[in-house]
Image 1: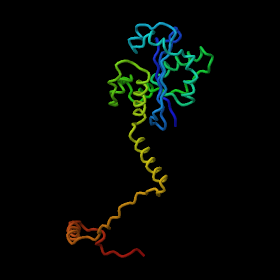
Image 2 (image 1 turned 60 degrees about the vertical axis):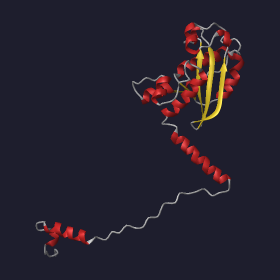
Image 3 (image 1 turned 135 degrees about the vertical axis):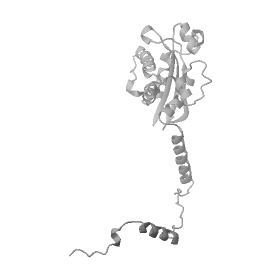
Amino acid sequence: MREIVLDTETTGLDPNDGHRLVEIGCIELVNHIATGESYHQYINPERDMPAGAFEVHGLSAEFLSGFPVFADVAEAFVDFIGTSPLVIHNAAFDMGFLNSELKRLNKPSLPMSQSVDTVAMARQRFPGAPASLDALCRRFEIDNTARTRHGALLDAELLAEVYLELRGGRQPGLSLAGAEAGAAADVADGAAPLTPVAEMRPPRPHALTDEEVAAHEAFVATLTDPMWSRDTEAPK
């Protein structure tokens, strides 16, 4: 199963107010394991950079002016994500900006059903607890010390680790993948798959010892008129 962990940076909070995308970062997962494939693009927003947004991500209008506009990268971006589920932290925000950019180009929108919202996952799993990316990194002991500012690719990498933890942790999947890879390598080399053989143990003795017999007889002697000691006739 292919999934894309995605994050964006923008000039502000609402595309309806004229704010634009300035960065997209994507990490590819297959069967919940990072493949090493990624998509990263800075985008010229064709407008100024508000001070508040610059404080968040540190991307100036001057820096971004040297990069392509969204129209020049839209096709490559859409081709990379395809129809794979998009794992996003606060999906409504990023999907809103992506669809606003696509709408400008008269391209089809991305359906919200294609997104997987990790904020909703975190709130369902940890009701009442902080659900920010930094808070979840602390909860799962994921090193985010490199995150001095928001950055789409770095945040997507951190979110990929958080997402796998929210799904129950990475180790079981990685162990299974390692075992499957080892078995596949054996078969490829012409070796028969190994089947674990149970260790044979000698049968345990079940005969009573003299001490156990004596203890049982002593116990029975303490009983008053046990029914198995009565001399009764079978019913006619």
